[in-house]
Length: 213
Image (cartoon, rainbow, N blue to C red; front, side):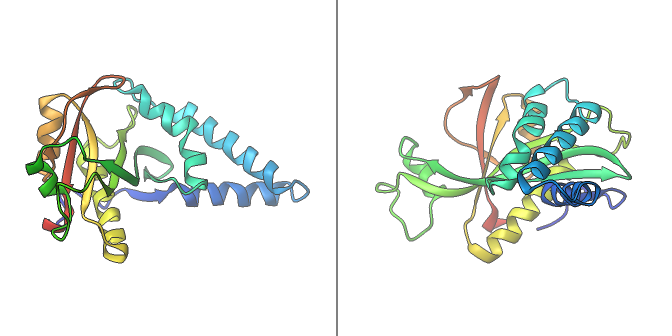
């Protein structure tokens, strides 16, 4: 895929690596404690780091996810989260995962865009999809030019890497129902589908056929 705004000044650190590094440090500090205790202490330190250094006033749900869910979701292989870093600072993060997308209620024309060409849209009620679950910039980010486009570009690249190995073509996300935000996703090739729904705020489902990028 074409890079849209990758800035090589910052780094990308998988949460898996952050967790493993924390656990290794704890094992070195306290070799007598067992695996569960190591994991519990690693989670405590990670939560403390989030509490002390990551904030997003406009969307507190992303902070709740990072603080309370990302660690366990990573270890249980439910999601993959990436922290974007400048030296020791967390600039932002993105999270991707797999999802079974229910499409039975969608219009036939939309279903045709979502399913594999060998499938019948009338008889298909669900498809596998990649989900961009989170994209969030830290309010205290010191790198002014760092933006959501950088994180979204990386998330899509990671999905494209997975797609090259295991297949699939549809990437989905739920955008806040704000024209400026929707237009940003549309600049990446995302299209609206389905109806608005009310989560913490009104959200617009969007999809990208990554095989056409």
